[in-house]
Amino acid sequence: MANIISDETIEYVGILAKLELSGEEKEQAKKDMGSMLDYIDKLNELDTEGVEPMSHVFPVMNVFREDVVVNGDDREQMLANAPLKKEGTYMVPKTFD
View 1 (cartoon, helix red, strand yellow):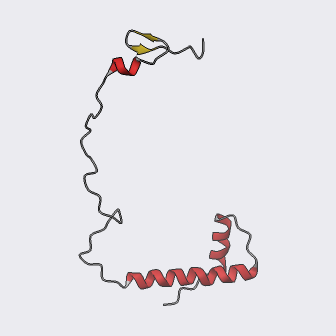
View 2 (cartoon, one colour; view 1 turned 30 degrees about the horizontal axis):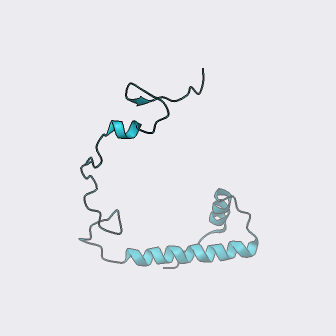
View 3 (cartoon, helix red, strand yellow; view 1 turned 90 degrees about the vertical axis):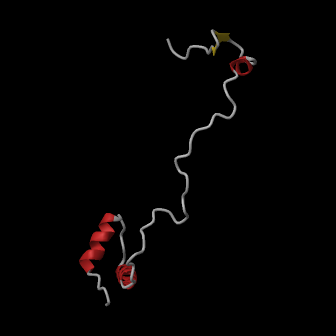
């Protein structure tokens, strides 16, 4: 079940990752990639029949809760400390002409 990575594959991955690898680093990368692929093959041996795919590690409940107004709209209290106000809104200086 040993996955053997070719020199061309390592060269290509190095180009994609924009890495310059020495010969020693290429050999180590080949071993590492082979080990990863062997592990994936091992995981593929597991019987996953009847196991539901999941999108989250933890159960997600009530994602689409209803919006509930908590503080209300007390406009007078919000405008109480405004330096300038006009017709129930804040007045701000112009930022451009």
